[in-house]
Picture 1 (cartoon, rainbow, N blue to C red):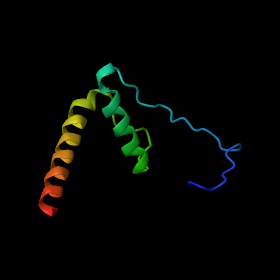
Picture 2: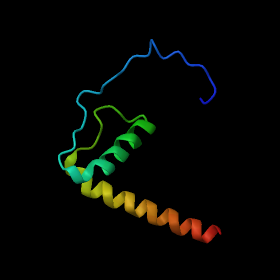
Picture 3: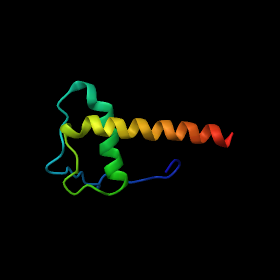
Picture 4: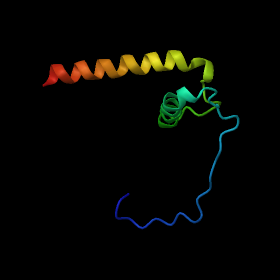
Length: 76
């Protein structure tokens, strides 16, 4: 939207309720990534994750990043 004049004065803020809350200070990045993943997929109905899911979410993200790295290596 760079270079466009947007009138944001009338934009409303929406807060999902309930919104998942992180419990551990160590999970903020993974928690934020999962939150953004849900927003990108428009899967915001109840946000299907909790603090208890963070270890498995961390593992899935790690596998995804490792696969992406090796796929990039094969393409170059």
